[in-house]
Image (cartoon, rainbow, N blue to C red):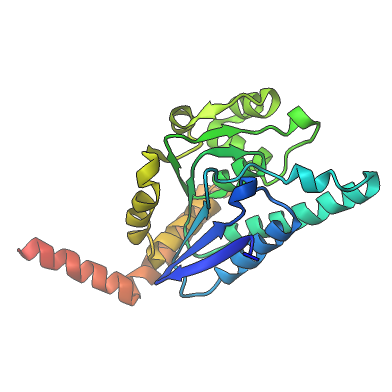
Length: 253
């Protein structure tokens, strides 16, 4: 039996893959726990970038409603709490990594799938991607950090429009409103992500990610101190020294 989530290391890049293509990579309890384990594996200091993607036609259609429906009232409530605890644990770990998180999305992105896509630092969408929140349509409230991430990406009014009306958003509109970083042809999605991530698997990218996240909840004065400390550490690092040397060598040519 194939694990619902796998981690493949390619040099300094960890590829976290949702592997339930026959169910649209819907998140059941095993998948949520698999995501938490996969995210924890990415804490390895050798990992400099993380790619999150889904196998098959869709990235992630949200929670596995078929699984949820097998439980009666109180049992369903406790089961959903187990699923969200594991899923939210994975999101917490991803948020705390010293490496940028890049999501490659295609096909249907719904419910918790929107939360996973929105949690990434960069989200690259195939041109056939559609987003729909879908929670209130089945009488649920959102999870997967959607009520936190969406307002920050698209603004509170537009976030509420997407969350309350459950209207479907195509890839082009998603890029226009800031939900995704860029849109590429479906057949070149993974190649585009591989090219992109090759330049991001650096300590400097991880530090930049951390600085932007810290700055969102910080006053300017202490944040300037963080920037000064980070750039001085980078200047002394092997990566920083090599980068400056390479730049100066190019200038001499």
